[in-house]
Image (cartoon, rainbow over all chains, first blue to last red):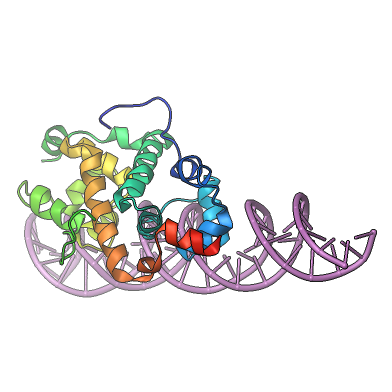
Length: 104
Length: 104
DNA sequence: TATATCGTAACCTTCCTGGTTACATGTGTC
DNA sequence: GACACATGTAACCAGGAAGGTTACGATATA
């Protein structure tokens, strides 16, 4: 993490809602239809209860004329922040020179 | 995809093996021990049968003094390429002006 | 030979994604 | 009011992935 932030990144579903759906008055049903997925799937993402998968990133990029990487980056940054905060096990990993020398 | 490539990106597990493990003569067992995970988990990644999760990216970054983003980017580029090639459904998505006008 | 080691298979649990169906609520029409 | 329809979310289910533990096959070692 290049910049360790105290607060989690905004959930990509929130950004989808506030930056794309609301300004354009697009409903969950509309977007589901446009993307060719179920209303339930869009509802979960928008309500921050589901992730933006690679397939979904591709679909969103087509609908909103963005790059799939935009959505993917939002999701991955969110994932990485939570992985780093939800558990601390990973911090037990020692850099290799130390760890490998000890075992060699 | 900024550059549409014909061939898939290299699997991150392959890069882990050829750029990190082999040059340093680190075995699967060693790395599993260093990272604090099972041999099976490392074996799957190295043999391109598993993904590098966010947690794993954090662990690898500690062991090899890289950034977690390095590993995460390898994985997500691999994921995105495969999502775009494994199914073509996403290409049916129409840009919003067209799709939304039709339904409005 | 017996034993130890290593990488992968087998078995199992947990969790996530996604669709379909069901449901609760709201809206429009008569 | 009753009724039909629309919308977003819950409930149910199936499929698949990640991960650990145990088992196994192959190899190395004493």
